[in-house]
Amino acid sequence: MIFDTHVHYDDEAFDQDREAVLQRIREDGVGMIADIGADIASSKKAMELSEQYNFIYAVVGVHPSEVEPMQPSDIAWLREMAKKPKVVAIGEIGLDYHYEEPERELQKKWFKAQLELAKEVKLPVSIHSREAAQDTLTIMQQMDMQETGGVIHCFSYGWEMAKIYLDMGFYLGIGGVVTFKNAKKLKEVVQKAPLERIVLETDGPYLAPEPFRGKRNMSSYLTYVAEKIAELKKITPEEVIQITEQNAKRLYHIS
Image (cartoon, rainbow, N blue to C red; front, side, top):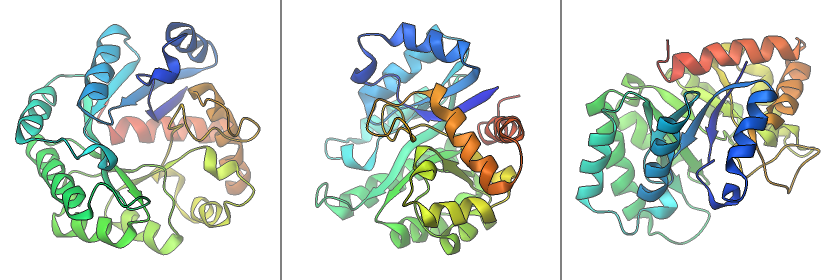
């Protein structure tokens, strides 16, 4: 069964037909999903979904683009939520330098605070890193994040950076981007990385694969990602789905 390790069904893009979408993805062979928080409000929604559906797990945290209003009380709240059995990671956390705001030092402050929390509660991390390769890596190395492990979500850097993260024990989250014609660097990473360290993810409603590029993404479309990985690895899509499902369960400590 497909395990979508990173999706945002709490997002307003699914407000009109969320239940129908969740029913459809189950019919399409999706066995489990991790719904990922991007701020406190969406983390709450992710948890609500995980309590409502037995195949949904929650990841709670604050995305770098949303750290502006953060307070120490938010870390305290995340600490409490981390005790819940269906909360399987802290995320999506990290650094995003694509825009000028939020200010980089503020992003780093709350990234470190959430990494510290993950170590304290002994949960893996889901890492967002956009145009911030060196700072993300430096902070994670300084804080010994190989202790907790986790996933580099929507991996977008080259093989050199991928190898460092793999050596640290992290998984690489691979989604629709690998199907894009111009994704040469990512395709090289997928070819070289051991399949045992790759997990499937949509980042839905964003980053739909070809032939749905630009449309709303959902977990059913991971068959296209599995096919592309299979093609690059010269194996069957079924093998990709089976092995990445086991990887995802190890990543999130789901027995």
